[in-house]
Amino acid sequence: MITENLQKIKDAIPDHVTLVAVSKTKPIADLQEAYDAGQRIFGENKIQEMVDKYDILPKDIKWHMIGHLQSNKVKYMAHFVDLIHGVDKFKTLKEINKQAKKHDRIINCLLQAKIAEEDTKFGLSFEDIEAILVSEEFASLKNIKVVGFMGMATFTDNNSQLEKEFASLKHFFDKQSAKNPALEILSMGMSGDYPLAIKKGSTMVRVGSSIFGSRNYN
Image 1: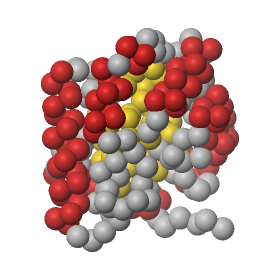
Image 2: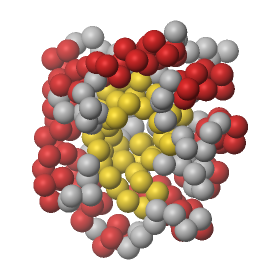
Image 3: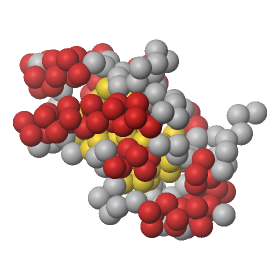
């Protein structure tokens, strides 16, 4: 089933859009099936779970940290994480930089913008992101690279609201990437809303239940 689901989604999304298979809470066997079907990018929201899976699964997998990030846990994944999606504090960037330096790596990061109207989502305002990107302190961080932005829309069936939220981030992304060619990734859209996010300019989607089936949190 996972193989079929994956193929269906890959056939439906444009070539320029990267698919992150959100594998949180899923057993190794499920990830292995997706891997055997050609998937190489997996997203986890808990660092310990990601570390455990990294230790077991093939080493050409690119691991994305997609959950809310606690600075004190960065050290556990700094030696292998490929992309960190949800950076919403400058302090966290500094910690990622510090841990990346220990492993002589440059870690790619996305700054998380707050685009949802609901208060449950994390993120930086557009003004805060802009201030970070032009700051001297940011320029001094040599072991991280901010390669784009991530945004989570409101959890709603109201398509016009979703469109408005995605469009606001796309507009901001276009403005910033015109000044900064390092900004290449716009990560918007999950299982419920990724077709709309792609329509609105997303270049990376995070899809879990549409690939692996619904999650078991027990």
